[in-house]
Length: 396
Image (cartoon, rainbow, N blue to C red; front, side):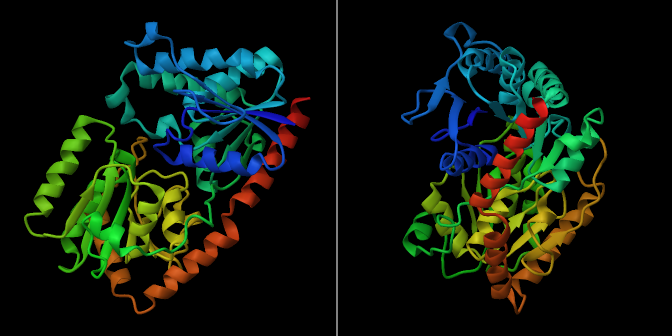
């Protein structure tokens, strides 16, 4: 069996959860089957991996058009594959066209949905309308779709009601259990400006509407004075949200001296050190198909306080591995809380309850156990290969 796996992100160019998923999945799949990776950007020094850059003549055009031309450059090379597997809308067009060109099944793994990220129109303009059109067309045409959570599956069927529910299956995201485990490193943490001897609430994520960082910054006003707020946050989607976050951080630092904002991308070892030193991990997302960051924190024995939305409740067990904060959300696709003041207050209360919980260490231990039991990449690879076989059989 030969699978051609298509992704915009691939090491070393990874900036989000989809890229992490692809990198880890490929490693375990290659133990059992042939996988040809086709990704965007500069040439990679890795066997069975080919990178594609858009032509220089497209350098000044909308990024969505650059994506389409890069996608098309891959299609001929997919000849001979048994199945094409695409990740995110950036790669879905490749999969759809290659499926028709070479008469092979197209499998999509859904990491997010364009209709549930309407704020992207502010960032991409007409490019967002193109990405939405490409995604809808590919999803409706795909042989099979993998959702990374049951919450994500429900979102897919709600966003695209024309899709046959039978072709949408759930295979959770996973985590590298050997890499992500508690490994305290006071020297590294101090080098990042964090005091390892003081309690801390840690956030990790891009500065984007869906990650909900502004709500955490407002909730942080209610944290005990000794608790550090550590923000591993960069890569803003828009100038506007960068300015909003900057203003909220500046306001918070007027009353708190222990806000640490790390804007650069951390290496894996640095991230593990930060997580391992944390007291509580905070995930205030308003849209999260699963949330790999929560798995990473739990793997490092850190309890999680997170929004009860999307796939997060399938990861974080309320009252056992963390606290889920309820949210009533707008139904316009934005996911914003109907009552922001209540959501912020509830999030602050949950953080404070966890910080003072007498069994806080037990939450961390149960989190690690849950990750080991349900979210190993070996199991996910086996499940994914099963979906490949079903897709090939149903396509034939």
